[in-house]
Image (cartoon, rainbow, N blue to C red):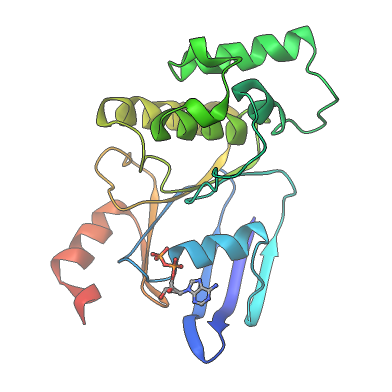
Length: 222
Ligand code: ADP
């Protein structure tokens, strides 16, 4: 579904990523981990087409992607309500959502435990509430591939666990492929996921069990 062959990204003389080779299969739950500044966000940006690779080829076999960026540039935006932000994530939004579309938005707000925010202005929400709204926006069009760059960074710990349960449900029920950048695998891990450790290049790719051995050997410190 997604294949990277010898991909490199550089900014001027600075090589952020080189020789990146991996593939993602349909239905994978794919975690991307690695130290700060190791190129994870850069990699994700090449996936969603926000950044062009300097070398190599990227084959992506789907058009319907949902993306939650790490940095939500919410300052200085035109004031938008929660409902408007979510509706902009629909595949073919019209000027106004229909009654059934409004209901769908409300159902999602309920699932994310923010049901009373429907008509609220985004500017007055806390970081965690905004993050939940953007998550709904990424999820609501039922994308084939969902790309989440540190989705829980602003979420409170009590919601984090629920959030991952929801993600696994989505993956199971809709056969959604999930690509997930994270600092903390604790809540996210379930059987049958794949883990990729990035540090300028791919240092490890495999199961969680093998990843533990890899970490134990301290390979990523060399
Ligand atoms: P991570 O997500 O793993 O923390 P990033 O992909 O954000 O890492 O960044 C990797 C490196 O690339 C960092 O050293 C960062 O400073 C650099 N970098 C990212 N974007 C740019 C850019 N637009 N121009 C120059 N350097 C960049």
